[in-house]
Length: 148
Ligand SMILES: [Cu+2]
Image 1 (spheres, rainbow, N blue to C red):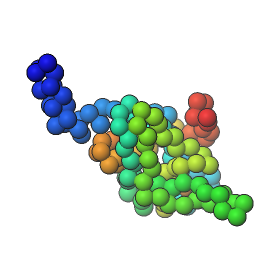
Image 2 (image 1 turned 30 degrees about the horizontal axis):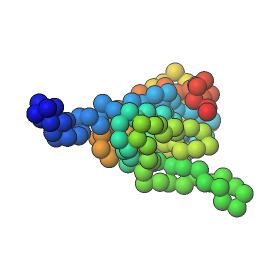
Image 3 (image 1 turned 120 degrees about the horizontal axis):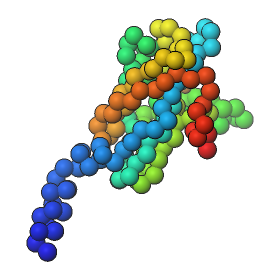
Image 4 (image 1 turned 180 degrees about the horizontal axis):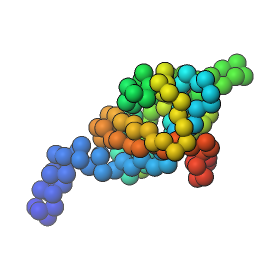
């Protein structure tokens, strides 16, 4: 009984390591840019086996784009509009899916068009889990399994 109590305390003392292990990034991809696009978009699913967390930031190499922002789509007067958000909630024991027409990563000010076959490196910043790097292949269409 005493040993179990000590184990429980030591788990509580290292929340960042626990949280880091609980998050996994799946199905990351970026959309191939149509000619002339000033901006690009990237998507992924965050699976969370632990307590709730928040995606609070995103960064991309300055060779790819000026900056990356977290965006969502909102209905406004019968139209879908993109809107910048400060954070995307990752529910406990659940997932958050970034996908076309939903939450997404916006790459503002592309330095060159994204072409199929390239890979984009993104760094995701989570409130509790800290930073996680992810490689997103550039694709023409959403990978199967993403649209649910
Ligand atoms: Cu956007």
